Image 1 (cartoon, one colour):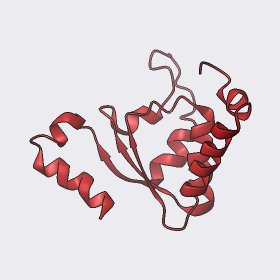
Image 2 (cartoon, one colour):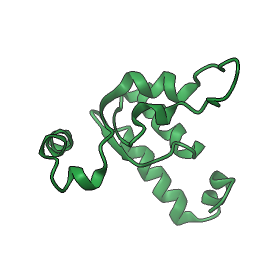
Image 3 (cartoon, helix red, strand yellow):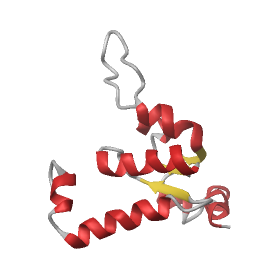
Length: 122
């Protein structure tokens, strides 16, 4: 969809409905979200996740080779590090699990990590 996704989404009723349903599911009591390979680069998705954390204590399980570092959008080359940002500050305390293992091995031969992910759904 390119940039300005929120504007584009609002142009299509089905996309607006999908996004609202996503928000509704995140805000259910006791909701948990497993995020697999998402870059946290879309503000409309990030805002929905952070709103659910702030308002309803959403728990988040990250599956990404970078682990929780995926939340840190600061320039690693900066001489003076910037403030960590809302993704780090809001999501990190609500992490209920992190898997940095390749998903292919998790579902192939890594029984320990497979068990960790399976417990999320239990």
